[in-house]
Image 1: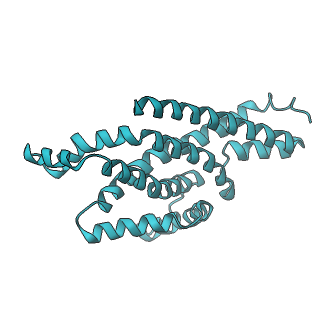
Image 2 (image 1 turned 60 degrees about the vertical axis):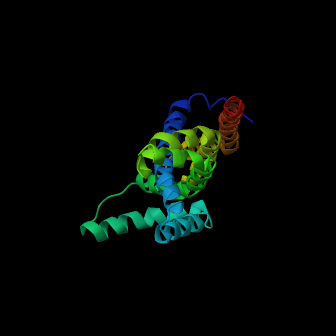
Length: 221
């Protein structure tokens, strides 16, 4: 084992890590927004909205993420061509980002739904008694409390997404893992670079998990 070539390769690996972090951050942001909308749809009194959201969640939770990434890589350009009538170039980053947002929204939906249902129903009744609408009640009273309760779960799912970003190798996107693998193949030290990448993923994920546990204890108190 010779790890001496890792230090000179750090600039290229850091570029891959930036891509990984961008995918994670934007995927979490888009997934939480879409997941919140789906959660409100599932809790809606309208059976149509509830069934649509339920089908969406069950569908995406029943298929592998790798399949979703590959499917969106080929489907997004086709859909844009169908809408605009022109060939719109879509890079691997954009297609992967859309895939992560759509896929993670199904999991964030269930987290948000559980957080909303954990709030006593009496608070909704009290907000109605004060003259608030359903939207005002959710925006000002229910969702702020729900997000506080479900913050640890949201962060834990974000850590899982950070690990899942390594699946973008299937469409050739140069994330951290793919950058390490490619650099190792070029130099002729694939094992050393893959071991280093595994250690980096472990350190980041383990440290983030400890922070989530500490935050969960503080919120519980």
